[in-house]
Image (cartoon, rainbow, N blue to C red):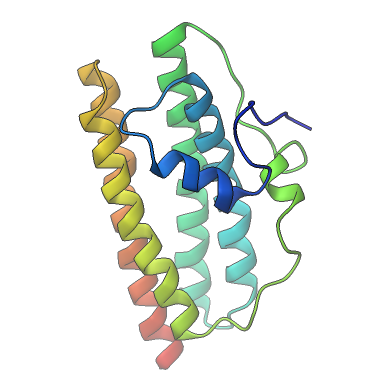
Length: 165
């Protein structure tokens, strides 16, 4: 199991609350955010398991795959900042999955709408972190993660349409 850096809670919501308070991301922030993003893959896959519509299922899985991609991009930023090679955790190694619930409430349009809003918030946060980056290439990568968060929200909106028939 990968360890959570000092100063961060052991639950992803608490850790994300700490990250929300940052205007720029340091090395430990990047590691924690990468772990949370990697956990997002498993979360979206779990949500996808809770829907029957094939199109909705694929849209949710695409979001999950991109969440893991965000984690790899954050590991790249960490290497750019510090020179440190750091591996994105597998699901078995991710401490933020160890504390995650094994099941979710019913997957309703209202539940997906909360994900859609969370993705919009994620884009805004990535823009803040990009504005706080000293290196233009790092800022570019953070902005890319943010734009993809907005795209996840667009997919979530499409999932809502699928669920409503």
